[in-house]
Length: 212
Image 1: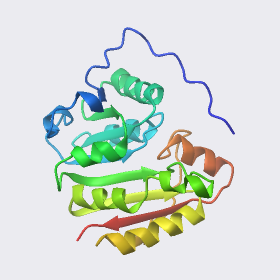
Image 2: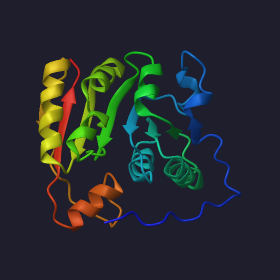
Image 3: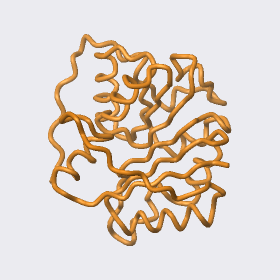
Image 4: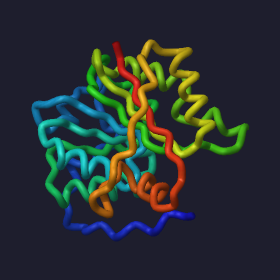
């Protein structure tokens, strides 16, 4: 099933706070350019249309949420949702997640969220998967002590290979299973992809890892 066309973004919306571009960041990256409130930072890899950022930033206004999205049009769309809702605690960074994480200071994030990353189905393309040892080590590096990695996928093989790589290349503790929560509204899902999977009755593998 293909993605629906994105709604047009109001040209009058000011996206200057909610949309950042990776190439614009100074080296080393300062978190003051990303954090709008005095609270912990949580990172999302692959924000898509921004449903997680929108819901989480509203539910936890005392936390900062930064999503990284490679696609320019999806990054702009997610940022526009946040701008319309005037969420000072949520930002979208448009760029490659591997490069973005490499620029972050160590032990800066209380949580990292990776929901339904591209499985790159063909065997010859699987090296492009985000949940590979180099990136897993970056996740471990940026997490604070007791920080949590949330990883969800609808591909069992990807789930199993990521768990094997996490055990082999990091000291993160887990996996800890995450129970499926009932949705109270039509948009009460972590991501639009989770919503689609659950409406179609598809299996989803959800786990957490914790940094000692």
